[in-house]
Image (cartoon, rainbow, N blue to C red; front, side):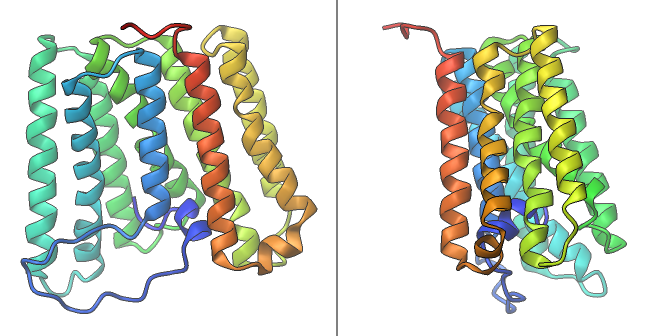
Length: 280
């Protein structure tokens, strides 16, 4: 989705792209969202405890769906004139993603497959994002939260296409991924505004911690999987402890921090979800 806080924390804002030939592919500069997408997808695959060619196909579908958003949103921003490059590549990525999505849905052999609700959720999030971009409200906290909820749908997506079912534990995993990565919405504001108040970040992390504890209590997350949320709490405490450094250090250091914590989250979550012995 557009201008994710995680991407803002990892990369400097990209300059306005120059006009290019229509046949040159577009690639989203939202490198932070690549991390969210792949980490969420891999946690879903770990929960499925299997990886098949269908899982690979689903990853391609998720990647193309993510890539489709970038040129289409750029076209919305430049709505006074049509840009063939954005329309061509937005349409191509969308076409590939939709074709694979329909094929995966057909393979399920069930009109009420959980994939239907995942697809509807992703489409609804894209529409909300497009409307927010049109009205220049794409950086609101609500829209950014919806962005993370949508991208983290890749976790149940990977699970459903691999296993053909959906469980409360996978819904819990989706919410865990969302709460983990949404932390960046609040921490990145410290770099954008060094006088940004601390209260919103404290409130978010307190509520998120209670929600994760609730998912644990309900049995939607195992104890070890729930504890992975502690990674983002440690990152948050580090940022508070070294707030001046966080606000003034070079972007490469922030990129290292974000990447390291995301990979640590993935490692602990995957270990907690995989069986003691993988099938040979």
